[in-house]
Image (cartoon, rainbow, N blue to C red; front, top):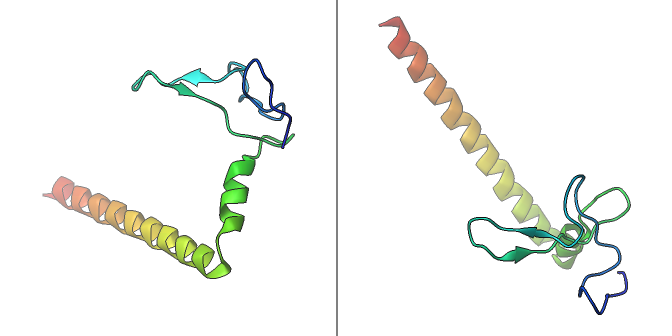
Length: 91
């Protein structure tokens, strides 16, 4: 982790995405300030890695399995919608 700046309250390791503002961004919908997450030199969000490493291996597997099942469900829904659309077009 970087050293916190007294003026900005932000770590020296925080970097905005390309073209972004150095101190963060305004969330247009809520109007609140959103700080950029801590990133490494390649732009990888280190907070997500730390969050995942706090979980047990079993918790990580369960989270991954939920994501996999959600992706498969979305895929199936899309396939069914396309099949219905094709059926409607052939009538």
